[in-house]
Amino acid sequence: MGKVHDQVDGRLRAFVEKQQVFFVATAPLSGDGHVNLSPRGIVGTFGLIDDQTFAWLDTTGSGSETIAHLRENGRITVMFCAFEGPPNIVRFHGRGRVVSLYDAEYADLAARFEDQPGARAVIVVDIERISDSCGYGVPLMEYAGQRDLLRPYFERKGVAGSAEYRRQKNRTSLDGLPAFDFDPTDEQYQ
Image (cartoon, rainbow, N blue to C red):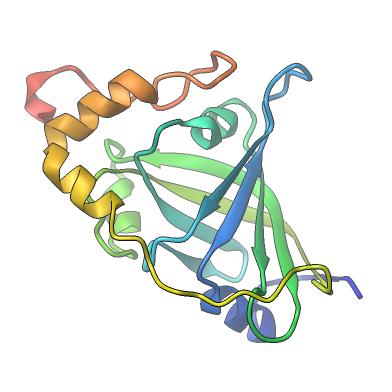
């Protein structure tokens, strides 16, 4: 059944790199706060940096819970499920950090991934615990392809429109925590 691993290599690495989607769970420190669970799966926007570090290019969305929770406490779990082939679940428990598109480190990290209009950050996860389990309860499903909606949406918005969208929708979390409040209102970035 389940096993804890020292690093992501071999069979585990091959499994993770083959997946079309993964799920991210974070939570605020407050017991009254909302736990967040988000799917991620845009082709070319996630992968292992090394055998203890995972990252993804985070695109602008209707909320910013993951960023808010990571800024507050860093706790994160990333989960991959086999929807095709042999059953398997892999979880990375760790500490995440937000590298905003305005941070000096962003360009080097973002270069690892396919460019995405509306990208706002790279989320980097230092993996502290790696485990897998049977996945017997996960249904078999077939991958039908990517949705072609997000890219054209943010291409139409452009850099200035994407920043304005984030200022309107991504500044704070559901619980009022600071989220993606990095976008300057200064004209030089628009």
